[in-house]
Length: 143
View 1 (cartoon, rainbow, N blue to C red):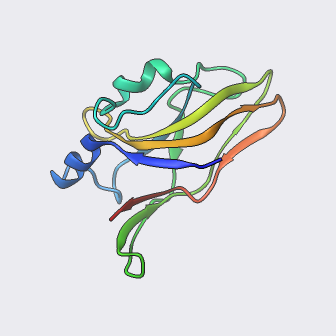
View 2: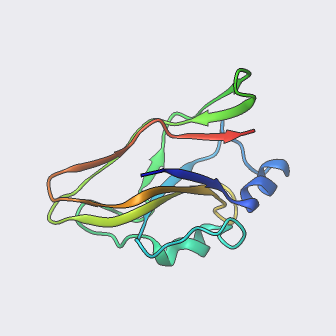
């Protein structure tokens, strides 16, 4: 299982245009259904991906998870800048969450809800009722 992370081209444009500020903006993360396939060109905004977001229910609420405590830093060893966030957890209640194969991070502060990128899990996950699903060490890199 290989996890892949891909940035959207629109995010790169918005970042270079000065429209994204990791110190001030609100970033959210959403889970996608298993038929979703990220396209860095076509999936520029939340509206472009929302049809493939998991439905609200069983402990998952659409557009509910905010990524907290963004920390921006330089990584001179690996020649990149990065923003890291706290872990995020969904707990299934009243039924299963999923299956899901990917997550989308988007900037909820930009006028168009810019998609930052996609985390493709490399496999599909279903969170059984009473269990939790946590994404750890979330990081957005600019190299």
